[in-house]
Length: 335
Ligand code: ADP
Ligand code: MG
Image (cartoon, rainbow, N blue to C red):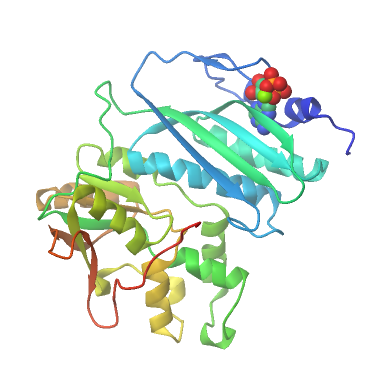
């Protein structure tokens, strides 16, 4: 199958926007020309890029469909955190080799998720790389209204409540299942919990509906990709406040309950990345509104702390309750 040229690859695997139903009328020129043309007559544009590197963001033996679902989930999660609606996407793909089976599984999964979220793949670039797959997606979309209002990291106010969606510890737990580094006896993980944790790693579920519903309600938001404390710190820094988390209020994924080492679980919850939940702040008056959204979306949202004044030591994150501490919870950084 190595005889496929890059043009064959594009035609065969990535031109699915042409054949999907409800083809997007606002894509005036899609794949096949020197550039795409989109008709943007509505709201301000939102653009986000994320790159996934084999061996860094996913293990080398990751299935093609998981590379696709993880790449899409991670990118869509940024849109969720902005309360924005994704519409179009470009993809830069660097492949070490051309394998028909791999490309076929990858593109089918990609097409399915694009369709699910009404995203049109309008272009990209396909190149060869010596080793290790690299996939970079750029999502383009729009804000909820003409005004351009969206969720930002810089709006948290002293006195706000701090909330988190879903449950925590999933990303670190899944990594441990994929690449065990500890005595597995410590964690007799049930089959159900195992498959739930792994599927949230293979296909993170972007909290798009929650993000949209929180526009006008939350004062700030971020998606937890690097780790709870690290990402809370981004809100703290950009809003010039203290994020004061209550350790015992944090919603720990039920699959981690059987773990014998609670300290280890605490560590995962505070500094494990790959949660793709939303961390957000809102005034206490919005409590009932957030509960109503949570109920309507069937997605738990938990109040996990409050916003305080930046202390003398500066802005930052604190975690109260026994055994919890924000210290040394750096989260994931590339450099
Ligand atoms: P050029 O040489 O003019 O840059 P390319 O050969 O790179 O054109 O790409 C041809 C067409 O295929 C373009 O419309 C481009 O956007 C699209 N394309 C290339 N690679 C991908 C990809 N991985 N996913 C989606 N579209 C792609
Ligand atoms: Mg090109």
